[in-house]
Every structure is written in structure tokens, then in C-alpha cells.
Image (cartoon, helix red, strand yellow):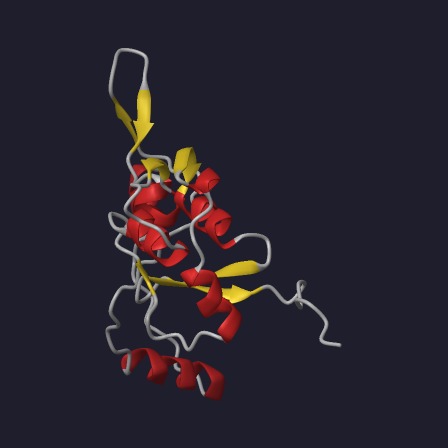
Length: 173
């Protein structure tokens, strides 16, 4: 009985020789895998709402996620508290002042239409001199007003204004 059991165990562990196949799909897939070339790994920033399972304990009962904060992934989402100095007079200079620590710049390369150029040379409204606990992007939008949109180039870290198509301006008579 023991000899039979031992024979069955050893026979079950024996390696079966591979069976040759003539299936062309199998052979094509095998040749593709033989020609595999290594590719660089690509990592992309994930949306901030994606849950991250890695947690770091900071106290007895508190944990924080081990990932960058939202404003570190997108500096235009940083909360700012800024008093614009009295020496700054125009919307353009105000936007540049707000952007100075964000890593972004106001674009000088975008060919501005006449009304955008006029906006940038307007005097800054007094109500826009102090932004208290505001997201930077929203402060820039407030500077432009309702008739303008903010264009953001995250690759070159540039921002610019363009006229919002919903507001065509005064009709010429």
C-alpha cells in the first residue's frame, strides 16, 4: 500500500513534455513575446480624489496619506491670503504679483486681442487689493472679471486671459 501511494505521488510530480502545436495564432504570439523590448515606466499624477492606501501615522490616533497635497500637484489650487501693495496699479501687475510664488507666469507670448490688452492695462479695482483665504486660480479669475476666462498651460506653467465667448461685448451700431 505504501509503495503504491509513493508511486502515485511521484508519478503526479513528473514533468510532462510539451506538446508541439501547429496553431499559427499560438506561434505568432510566441514570436511576439520573444521580441519583447523593455519600455520605460511612465508615472502620471492621479486626480486628487483618488484614495491612497498608504497612510503614515503622525500621532497615536492620527494618520495622513503619503502623497503630495492637492496644491503641490497644481500650484494654482493653493489657498492664498494676499494684500496687493498700493504701488501696483494695473490688472497685469496684480496678476504677476499673485503668481510670483506659484511657479506660473503671466504669458507674454500669447497674442492678446485688443480687449484683453485693455483689460491688462486697466487699473485694479480697490476690492481686488486684498484676497483673503482664496484659491489662487479664483483670485486670478476675479481679477479678469466675468467677461474673461483664464487659459492655463501646465507644461510651460503659463497663464493668460481670453475673452469669454458668452460675453461678445457691445454691439457696434
